[in-house]
Each structure stands twice: as structure tokens, then as C-alpha cells.
Image (tube, rainbow, N blue to C red):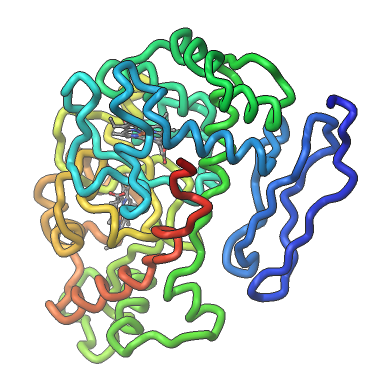
Length: 369
Ligand code: HEC
Ligand code: HEC
């Protein structure tokens, strides 16, 4: 079996007739290179760790593990329990997730898509360096799946079905922690979201409504602090300045930042690094599929997008846990933006164009069982 070499890379034709290659270094252990099907004029080329190139077999094994309660101590919970596809892989609108022992966590579950373009820093506080290390944490976390790695390995090694898939994917005969991490990493990296109305408008296949167009301008324009200077006919004059932190085609900035939330005792990155300059910095998440991932922020404090917009455009000033004048990114927002109720509505309409219905239903990402 080890003599199996890949002889060819798979080229696939996409919507735009552009080719995407999962750039895999020559590796005798691979069987079928995984082929991505997204449009490269919308999102960057694949970014895959060189020591874990994606294969169809590896992604499939990871998908099985993701949906299998075998990873939890009482077989009641899979990754999917708190990362449901219909909610862009977040936890069914729950503010906090409930683990196998009935314990409640303190952070809101995070969406899983386009992870291959994230910075190496997972969880709201960046406490996991790379994805395959992240993937082990929920298994052993007492407040989540509450299992031991040794026990998971034993259960998997006992299963003829898993042994068969392990052999196909990694040409190995026994599971270990590294392989479990790598398989889950492969499946999660394979999840791509790039088929929202926004994307189709970018490709010239659809058009925004007038309201969505105004919302897009507001999203992408800096705010003008002084209400007196506002020209009510020009949305560029009262932008909401979202693009500085949630811009580009991924709708996220690959940084841990503070966005002026009030203190709830969670210092985020600061608690991980111990550096006071990192206090209240959290992962700047993508706004793609944001309509489906309520509630919002690391502690799920806002139930609706209306509440989020209200926070950014007025409440933030009064309550911020950090001095906003020290934060150049929030400078434009700090003196408040003047948005009429219609413009707030337009901004939210634009955010809703980022919903990718195909992500929520794509069988490639759904349960294999
Ligand atoms: C009990 C609910 C629960 C289960 C089960 C669970 N997760 Fe999560 N997941 C969360 C929560 C809550 C967070 C955010 C935690 C934090 O930042 O402290 C999270 C964060 C993540 C992230 C970080 C995303 C990012 O952008 O940084 C990934 C990836 C992830 N989970 C994958 C998994 C995988 C893989 C499994 C199964 C092995 C799993 N989760 C099981 C609740 C859960
Ligand atoms: C200074 C950078 C910055 C700016 C400007 C900014 N954001 Fe954010 N945004 C963040 C960070 C950081 C988070 C994560 C904060 C947390 O949970 O602690 C976030 C979180 C969010 C969330 C919740 C994401 C989730 O997964 O729960 C939404 C929605 C959001 N921002 C929308 C917007 C909108 C709309 C604007 C413009 C009005 C905007 N943001 C402007 C940095 C920013």
C-alpha cells in the first residue's frame, strides 16, 4: 500500500472556469488529493498546512469523527452538537453550550467555515495555536465532551469501520492523538463558504436592491464624527466603518482586536498572554453568514444584528472596557456615527447578503451517517 503514489493533481473546473489546485507536495502517503470547488476570483487560493495536505479519504475520516458522539464520554455529544451546519456550524442559537455533564460554558460557540484563511490562533482568545491542536480540546474539556484521549483512541481502534477508514486515509493501522487531530483538521479546512448573494453580485450574476447598495456603502465608509457635517443625501458621509475590521472578501481581519465591549470579566487574549496590552482583545470573526450565527460576540451578549448595530453606533462609547482613544481602529467609531433608522436597516440588509444557503445544506459537510 505504501507504494501508492499520487501521479496527478486534480484540476477541477469551477463556476468561473478557473482552476483550483489543492497544492499538495509530493507525498507517497496520499491517495486522492482533495479537490476544492470554490471560485478563486472570490476567495484566496487554498492555504493548507504542508504536513497535512487534504485528501478525500482524510476529509471523510474527519467528517465521520466530527459527527460521531464516540468522541464524548457518554456517547451523547458530537462536535456537531454545538456546531450545527444549519447555523453555519454554531450552536443552535444558544448563548452558551451545554457539555455532557450538563455544565455550561462561558463563551458562545464559533462558526466553522473558511478556517484555512484564519490566522493561527483558534478560540475567541487564541489559546489554540493550530487547528489540529484546537480539535483535541473539546474532547478533553470537562465542560464539553469530558473524555480522555486514551479512551477515544481505544474506542476507535476497536471499530472495524474506523480502522478501515484510517487505513484508507493515513495508511496506518492504529489511531493516535495526532491522527485524530489531523483528520478533524482536514474536514474543518475543507469547509468553504463563498456562494452568498454578495458573491453572486460580485460575479455579475445578481444585483443588490437599492437598500442593500446603501448598506454596502455605509459598511465600507469611514464615519464622520460631527453630526453637523453630515450630508443626509450621501451615505458615504455617515459610514459605519465596519470594513476596517471586517473587510476584504473574507469579511474578517486576521487579528485579535478590541471592539469596545464592556467588561464581563473575560480578558480574552490578555488572559492567555498575560500581557496587559492584550486585555479585552478577541478574535475578529468573519461576518459571512452572520445572519445565521446569533447570538453575537464571545459571550453571545447580543441576540440580534439590530442590537449589534445599536452597540457599535452608540452604546460602545459609554461602556467600553478599554480607553477607545488608545485604539486607532476604533478611532473613527468612537465619536459616534450618525445613522438614521433607515440607514441602520440598510446596513443590516447588506449584512444579510452574506448568507450562503449552500453552506448550510451542502451534503459534503453534512453527517456521513
Ligand atoms: C459543548 C459544545 C461544544 C462541543 C461539543 C464542541 N465545541 Fe467547538 N466550540 C465551542 C465553543 C463554546 C467555542 C468557543 C470557545 C472559546 O473560545 O473559549 C468553540 C470553538 C471551536 C473552534 C474555534 C473556531 C475559531 O474560529 O477559532 C473550532 C474550530 C471548534 N470549536 C471545533 C470543534 C470540534 C472539532 C469539536 C469536536 C471535537 C468541537 N468543536 C466540539 C463549543 C463546542
Ligand atoms: C476595531 C475593529 C472593529 C470594528 C471597527 C468593527 N468590528 Fe465587529 N468585531 C470586532 C471584534 C474584535 C469582534 C469580536 C469581539 C468579541 O466577541 O469580543 C467583532 C464582532 C462582531 C460581530 C459578532 C461576530 C460573532 O461571531 O459573534 C458582529 C456581528 C460585528 N462585529 C459586526 C460589526 C459591524 C456591523 C461593524 C460596523 C458597524 C463592526 N463590526 C465594526 C472588531 C470590529
